[in-house]
Image 1 (cartoon, rainbow, N blue to C red):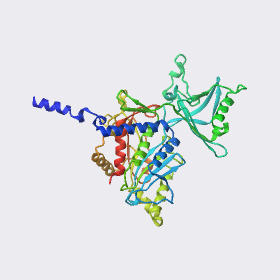
Image 2 (image 1 turned 135 degrees about the vertical axis):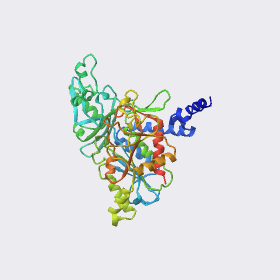
Image 3 (image 1 turned 90 degrees about the vertical axis):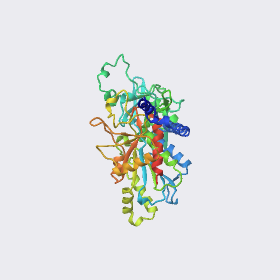
Length: 462
């Protein structure tokens, strides 16, 4: 009887019957709820890198961060940010120890899979005005049909004037749509593989139906574009315009414990990297940085991607500010070698409908904590660095879980590989997400809160 009672008591223990969200006290629940609210506001207002850097810069400014300038005093506790063409961002809090001893850096990417307009996007067909698009990042094209889409981005006019375009996210705006075939007439479509349900020349988004007074659809559309933004057709050649889901973030589930939204890969990690730095109290021991880049979803190319020299150029400037112009190369090499870096990116959560895609012993589950990942058979952090991060997690009692791809099944990458090429020690972390690269991804509030706590503990650790 005693043995049965012991077994029942063990089964009833909180660790066996609860998840991290349920183990939060009243104050933590309030903090987690406020964080989720703020995160959802970010996702709803900022769906492309240009909008995300602007959103975060406003938050940085409100927290006392200043644009980096050689005229500003470089001293422990100083807060700076640097923008790279408004599509990448580096935020810095100067630590009490010399930078040569190694900064603490969290890197993430600001871009998300989407549809980009072609360089000559206008096409009139069958009484409709269409915008030709192409996939950006790894998407399942069929998921983008029959959805309200917003047009977001920037156009440079010939005289150099920059024009911001945003149509569809405001409930009063019109939206755009990629129409699918009706099931009555799609016999040929059903024989296609899912990656070719929409071929490249079929990704044409409905943008209007009214011609001008002479019956010209293209001129009718261009007239409306000029009325709204003062643009002409040739301006679209020097444009960066994207189609994204015109849907607001929503809580998911009767218990409200989940977050559904477009762009969580990787609005989630990029927002939390900046948010944790903003919330950092006092002067940290090590100089702390949030480095947010563009173009990860297409291989880290472009001047705003992680493979550009933006970061190393910034570190050289900082080294000079610390008084080491005479041995600049050695100083930068030393700070890179001693850097502690988190490459933050979301990971797949095991899908209850398709559990066979994951290794159940190494996979991550929604609501069980942030993910501590391995990118093998590619790069990985040193065992020493991973052990130190384990100590941080244990010290602050932050719920975490592992993630590794199933052997011979999955694979992906993060910006961590490029950061390791700089001789940095890089560990991969993130949060589990369902429906990654979809138009409405799913995360858990508990995991967002856990990752935010971990980022804060990483920055603030002695």
